Length: 165
Image 1 (cartoon, rainbow, N blue to C red):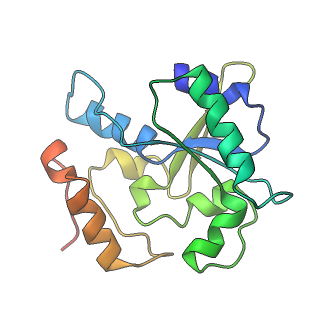
Image 2 (image 1 turned 135 degrees about the vertical axis):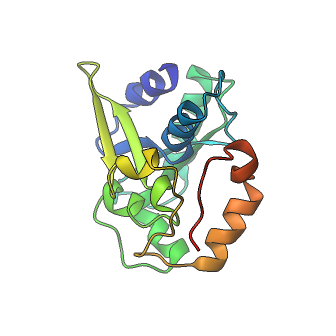
């Protein structure tokens, strides 16, 4: 919850704490993991097409590190990420999230000013609760999909997960 509060303090207009933060929390719950599986990084993604340089990302990352110094923040402006991935320009953060490699990674959450949660789940959160890990049909890079599953050791961390095929 502290991470969501820190992200909210940035007062970004279109953002989510995304990917493994929410995906892993669900998988931990489904596997009765007593403490959260450590994250390699905590993704804060936002959309601001007024400045595509890396400088704002670095400034936001520094601010988050002041608020939560023990968190491995990774801040990325999705308005420029299409350049890295060879996609057409994204219109907003939700569209960018919807094109990540695994359907179960295409999720994000933010804490609103009234302490309610807003979710981004391009394929529905029920996909995360199913324990099936699926390649995103909108970004079908099977080789990268297989590489990520192996590198991240998902099947050892969460042995109930099911892969296609």
